Length: 207
Image (cartoon, rainbow, N blue to C red):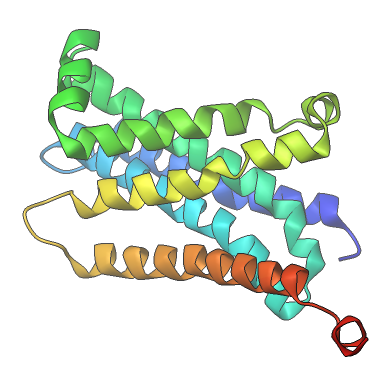
């Protein structure tokens, strides 16, 4: 990639489009009969989309050799956190009238809300440590270890989505399969790495 700065700008613009469309539709009263519910659904689905794209960067990069894709991973993750935060804010404000007690009650008593809140809370430290300065202060090893939390975020987020509604729909199935593939790839890659580390050299066995 000759100009990663321009490519990041393109990602920034495209990542902002869902928010712009949602704001435009809300301003023009085009969110249907239940605007808060529609806004919650759109922001949640958008957050899950960006989370999936974030997790897809590494497998696609390693399989295709397109190493420049790593330039976009951080921005995609921040968009996932942004839309998830807006998702919670709309729910908190319009569905629970800014009642902390009501939200806590939901989280404690219903798995749907528990997994959604878990995903967002796990994303918070990842978003908060996304700057180059913090990465340098933490050190690469500690930073990478912390950011492995994104795997738990993916699991919690997809469970949250699967629990939405009375029956599982095609969109939920597609995201679940995609997330399973992306996380499964990492498990397989880790196992292969462990096998390589534990492999005894032929020359050592022969002696």
